[in-house]
Image (tube, rainbow, N blue to C red; front, side, top):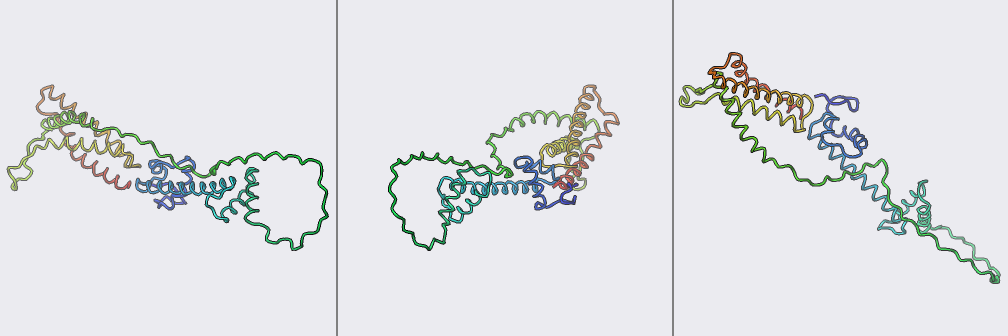
Length: 312
């Protein structure tokens, strides 16, 4: 399986080398990519995609937590409180506000007051107070100064480059699967009887597989047709639709599943047509095709199992 070219190489990448491309994909999508998206994007298996996705989500949550802590300190500073922060934390937050040209005037004024309270001038004026002659009171009434407008509370705003943590999906009930049993029972009876009947018309029948060892043991070889063909069709269909496999294994599972279902349908049609016509022995070309099915099913099953193992 060919991996995408990342960091100058096309060899399979470890999770550490996929973190940077994964972060870029996280920011581009505005949230954590799904496991299937990571598998398609970087051509990796499901376990590696799960690990990469978990690490990306953990990094996003840690970054969001740091932003919220910093914004809480600034918010408490503007309101005049500390929220349990030390003098050094408040000093650092006030300096960040003063250094930010986009900070509102109310926040900058609060930052200056906090710095003045926490870091007063350490060098008082050594000169004593000068004697000032008394001044007669001014008869002009003192103008009333209107009270200052209340400081508007600053709403914390996250950094635009910080990915938003994913919202947990709402819990939903999974679809029930028991109706499939009701659908499968009559289909099993029809498919089994059709294949066994076709096997009887094409030379399959009772055999003694252990001559000289267990002469009394016999088995009807016609049962190998429904077991082999239909079991492989169901397995290939599962691999195709499970979403856990990509690349050559997915393509092989898709086309072989469709092919096995088509062969199964043709086998049922052939049996019913021969039975309705009163034929007791199938034509040679039908017998040839049916005789090759066990071998073909074995080969396709082994090939699919190998491709699935390679994909992981």
